[in-house]
Amino acid sequence: MSKLQDKVIIITGASSGIGKSLAEEAMKKEMRIVLAARNTLAMEQHAQEKGWDSGRFLIVKTDVSEEQQCRELIEKTVEKFGGIDVLINNAGISMRALFADLELSVIRKLMDVNFWGTVYCTHYAMPWLLKSKGSVTGVSSIAGFKGLPARTGYSASKFAIHGFLESLRTENLKTGLHVLIACPGFTASNIRKTALVKDGTPQGESPRKEHDMMQPDTVASHILKAVEKRKRTLVLTTQGKITVLLNKLLPAWTDKLVYNHIASEPDSPFK
Image (cartoon, rainbow, N blue to C red; front, top):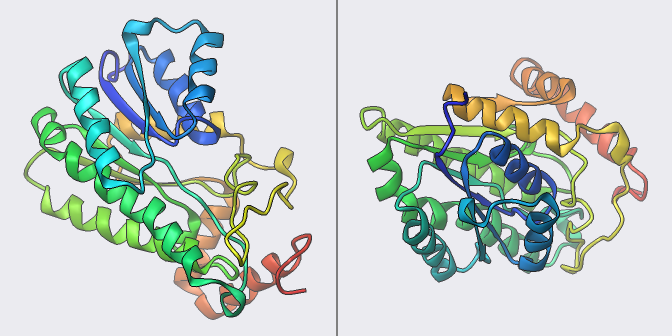
């Protein structure tokens, strides 16, 4: 029996990718689930296809960049389930462009979704998480440890999430709140297809080979296990772990490795 059985979990960005897989994994653990995203149709279809019991899940249309919608997400969760045990801040968008070419509105949008979305949801969930001695997770990235070229806005938002969650963890050393920073490496998910290019439009089809990457269901399983074990940090994929380690030991050399890796991508912004 999972320690998470019957716990109430909120998953943002639950309509696709890692968020969708997190919902499936949470249902396997017999949790009570709140799925939050802008695309309610995708979440409804997924729940219907899986034949989920309507008494065990709730779908809330949520744009996490809007503070009021985050407040309403928490209110509707508590109204249906009476509390909150786990909040997974998974909603996010990426980008792919050199800073010199970039419209600044792109970085602002990434910060609104990735950073402020995490802050808003966590803020309004805090009274309930403190009451349950629950868990808050930020689904971050290796880009939160190592600044990636052509990903300035994305890395900035992830570094900001790390600082926010580390501070939150230290503030709550004596309250029983668990804080997890989860950092997948390159994952086969929708985030690269919706990544913004220099003018703020989606890039479309991913330039990477999705089948060679870690799959979202594997990432989801690791994240919920880390929540269950109340880990501080989760870094996934061999490439991700090596990048984090090398950046600590040989930062200048790692700069060159990362530059060459990004420059070798199909349709790289460096070309």
